[in-house]
Length: 270
Ligand code: G1P
Image (cartoon, rainbow, N blue to C red):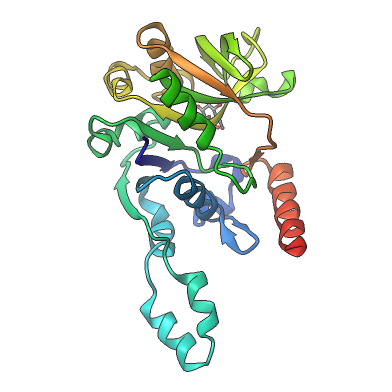
């Protein structure tokens, strides 16, 4: 059973400047809800009980969003608009926060969750990867973890021209959709090992922290989660689960527009 999840949300959002100078990309709206709200919901739907969000200095809006606003609740009550209160009520989950003081990379951000995770396996959800599925995308990864007792990566086949934006694996097929990961390369410029890319969802066993602590800055001069995962696949082993659903990367303008259109269509169909 996976009870805990880490959501790294400390990056500068360079691809989305200038708006991300003051608005965290995790607060970009989809149907009037911040993207990170969908991610927290996805974790809750998978049975996660505690979430650690890794933030940086200019991301207090995220904490404020998930806090209560008693003043606004009273105001809505006084104006006979109580029906809006549920939409501003924080999700029923234990949310914790930690600050990453310097942008040292995704691996470093995850490493800050070591004490939070303790001896338990932990889910990691990257908040710029959104799927609008009604079922949590973590569930098949949790199932794979229960079956193999190994760390698990969410994977998806990606067009060749996009592979240099992802962690890409070489993998042996175990059975349909499940792979044993042989090696991983972060953002390969040439000769990607396959077309299977990491899709921003992970189940990580506690030994990942040992490797993260030994990981030196890699590509982009940042501590890369992928580099620690490379060690993990040579030691305790990693399983990959191949998604076939549509993922939207909210840092990419086209995807962000598309996810909004799709979410809007789904809302109207309800
Ligand atoms: C990160 C990971 C990469 C993964 C990607 C998924 O990269 O380092 O391995 O494929 O997320 O979105 P980022 O997009 O943060 O540069």
